[in-house]
Image 1 (cartoon, rainbow, N blue to C red):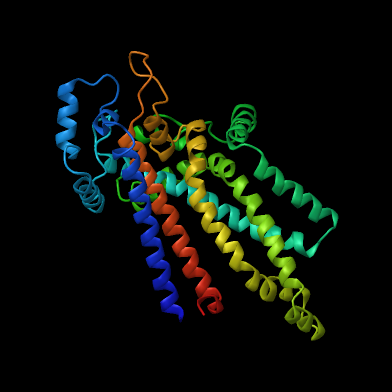
Image 2: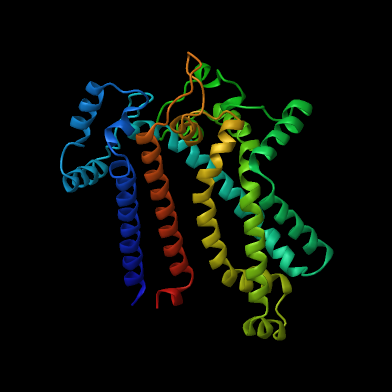
Length: 351
């Protein structure tokens, strides 16, 4: 099939995954309710409001026409209007997604930088005390809930030791108001760096230490275990025994020869870790009050919270469906990048 044929096939498969997601979300929002306009109208809509929504979204047209309109709107970046804010869903997601992607990327980077060497160390000391300790540590990171870890970190490192700020970007709810950062990418940390506000970037980065560690403990455990297993498999290979027979240094054998061949499954896990971190940010952003972010947007879409009159909000279905589509796109893009990286590292995969 060849290298480029492999990539083309993965791109086509990714397209069909996205298309399947669009069909599923269309089915959920247009077919399941008896009248989808009622679903989009919120609580206790008037007949006039329902009629306006039917006209605006084309719910009074044949089903196949509705589907074509749905697909057309998606490719034009139109994900509908949010019920709770009456703003375009695409604008709300575009405002929130960059900060969440930054936090997910920092978490994945931290997991890779720390997890891969620890996995190699665990494999080198297989069945020794250090190996058992790292296996228990990695299992604990996977098992402990992130919302509980975040609260513990706040209590210890913010309330008791006063090392890190307890919440919010820059450590204060008013930090971004008092230190305006030019909008470039939408990510506060990246925009501060790109615009030369290095002092503000340092404060934002310092306030992201606890959220990053909280979000990364689960993927860190996954990376350690994945690296350990891949390294143990690589170290039992024939070429490693040949390298040892030639008298190559043990460090070179482990970190150059064995690790190079063990990285492929680790990269796969890192790609999935990055995409999965977008779900973890829901808890982390709420605990550390990192707004705007995808976590706050999901909570808003689910109707969790209070209005000014202390009445519970109703579910914001256009917002929920829009977030679902965007998260799936991130998953698909992450997997596509991982597939290409695998083919670059090991051309045998593309054969």
